[in-house]
Image (cartoon, rainbow, N blue to C red; front, top):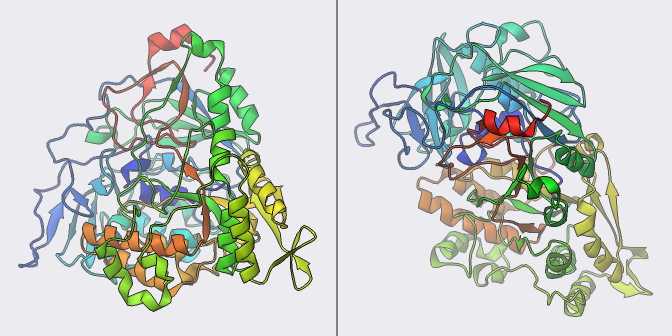
Length: 629
């Protein structure tokens, strides 16, 4: 269903401060000293073991473990997970190469988020932090006992080297996370200071808290700007024990992991090994799961979920199917136009093509009624629009009135709604009217302008995408567009996306609650022509730029939410994207060999590259299955 997810293992280190993306590892420090919160009137320094972007962290120093883990969970056992595509590098920092999305398993971060909050941070590598009332800098105090799996200590110099690697060689999207960092200074072996070009915003502090170390000693005679397949030292609870390039990766639990007794590492990282087997065919990967060769699946296909799990192992309880609720703020998933190319630089053309996407028919005939239409860039969250503009949203948009279409300030945005019959004649007429306004005329069944037929190629990396795209392609052909689908392998796809070599692609863009600097890379003008940036649509809109900066600088959560909704309206009414669909439930399937905590985190993640927080191998259940692990 999804053809691209904008992540990297280093970005994942940042996003692990967002509880929605917590995977297997977490860490919670014991305080170095008592917490003292800053007083804006006196300018006192905050000295704390935790922090939150807005308000206060949910948990205090008295907590002995997260409430959603079993601190006495048994350790051991081997699990196998499936991954789609391939990989040819372990360097997740640079633009070149295709890296495994599971690399976050080997990296601890300065601080880590909880599974019950969206924007909190608790000490992991750092035992404590200090920062002033104006949030213009932050100092991290690293734990002296922290070390890589090769025994070498983790120092402030390793954090500095990681940051400088991102700034000098990092992917554009990754670099954008740290635009506010003005300088970094090593104050001692276990103290590092980041200074910012902003004030009164916690967002930059939260971002640098997600940094992971790179061993200066290991990399001193190697080139970090190149691809590689030999793993460096691990700072986390797992290390890469076996690599079969493009085929599989095996992570093994670090026996003497330095942080295993930290409060919220208890009950986590319970498996002895985690192996990822790579598949280039999604159906083959499904069959491998049903044959017992893969332990866990997060299903993203409505057809497979409805039809492919009617097997004996489900009936007898050997395989468990579950649909836990998904409270995680969603992502915009849709077909993204490339505005760098004609005719997609014309908003009338984009709006017309949007009318040809008959979601109601696709939902009924292909999606088994399992999805709802997305009508926001921030779905399933408090940051997206709902209904007509509020007075507060209008106030934010008012200074830009002369640069906006009138409906942005007056009307609710809704994606086109058909009757679901598959005969969308009304929408077809509306689309042809917009094409005519843009100078395109239907002649002999072809949509023509200046003697050329309009053409459109949808670029996909997963064959699954053909099924839901086929009715859309047919409707475009009925409107006279020479429309087609091209499927390429994951390596070629990544190069073409980095080079913006496409007409239309299917993309899912996660935001990291609350939204912040990542929006610059997604939608900012400065990123539009930077190779490899996340602004794949090529959006260059001064109103969008101004609203993004207001979001980044927001001093209250309420102001931030109002401004993101205003931005949402501007993006939606410009028709940069044909919004697709989302599901408010997870769909997971797993072999019944696992123990689970009684309480689940609110923002639990079931991702293709991760695994539910705090699970373990239940020996009694495992013996009944007798799987070869």
